[in-house]
Length: 242
Image 1: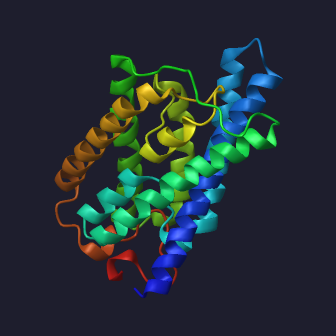
Image 2 (image 1 turned 180 degrees about the vertical axis):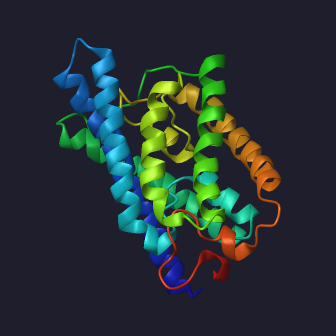
């Protein structure tokens, strides 16, 4: 694709990631204020808002960039030939910057200090295992739909999976290195302490590698054109032609 098209895609990934972080963190702050004595209800409110928000964010930006908002999704897409490696590497800083921007914006919307570093430690062995499983499941949802030509169902399926994974994983399913970094910048219900992030990112990358192995086993004859249909088709072209 032309440089202009890559710029558009990077902008879409930045904005989508920013909205995603704002939804996750903003709804976490709101949940803590609305239900201050009921952690289960707080988690439900946070999960429901995230699931619905992710569905709509993918619909908004998916036709431009594929709606990744997640470095692991971009890297796995590149491994299957659906995205050039240089473009996947360009997506990553845009996604991370977007999530940081969204976190700061969420703090500001709720009249908190714009940048507050989280003190919530999460990197226990059980949390790291949960992140491997959460990331593996997310990638299987996305790429299994792509390979069976059901990509239009991905926004709803991804939103539903993440909403469920808030509850069936002990880590509440970050499944995304960019959102893990973004959540550092909000000392709120949805935050994560900086010391916990390297473990989370490593676990998410392990989940990505596991997903590649599983997907190659289940779908051994995938072509780059099929691999390109990640989340939503990219307008009139696919990332395979990038």
